[in-house]
Image (cartoon, rainbow, N blue to C red):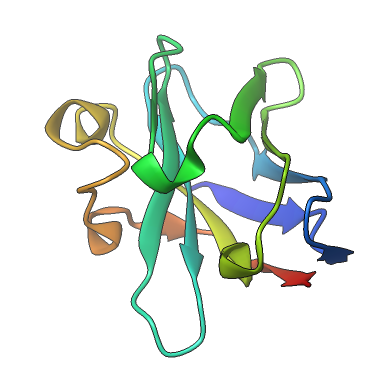
Length: 129
């Protein structure tokens, strides 16, 4: 059983930056698929970015090079650096982790969130114009 805790959500103006973190306890384990998802009001949850335990990443098309994942293996923490934020990025951002094979089955664009069994509580990101 793994626990996930997100942090870093805030309110920023369009064009600003935020860094979200997701800490896994007791650890991510040696083999996993881990990712960030978001859910905007009135919309379904969607994938933002995925990374597997080999460091292979996948980003959703809407990221357009603005976001970047980084993994601190010693701290069991996955971070999402978000730059040039847009009002459309307003959402609750959540991290999730599960079997490594999920990152082989899916990209961040077509991932099915409910295939992941372990989730954090989410952190709110609000971008204003």
